[in-house]
Image 1 (cartoon, rainbow, N blue to C red):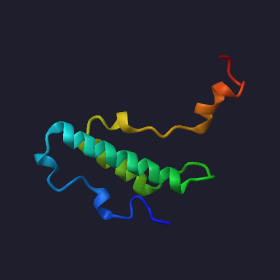
Image 2: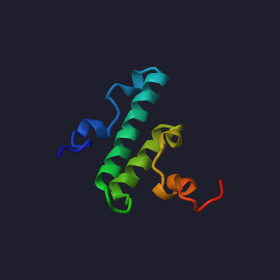
Image 3: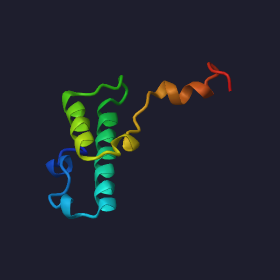
Length: 91
């Protein structure tokens, strides 16, 4: 099974990211953030979601270079999504 982050080039923004227009740079960083989250979900399949040291360092580093990093963070607890439909919470 190939890993989404097996290619080291996915771990860093493009080498010319400083020359990209702000929109293009933000788009590249968002794609990188989403791919990293997919990797976390793929590794946690069937198990409790656990972040590794690398995952935490990734988000710390990303937060240093991209102020909008929180907008791309979409990992949520499955219970949060399912609860309104399971009858445990009032609708």
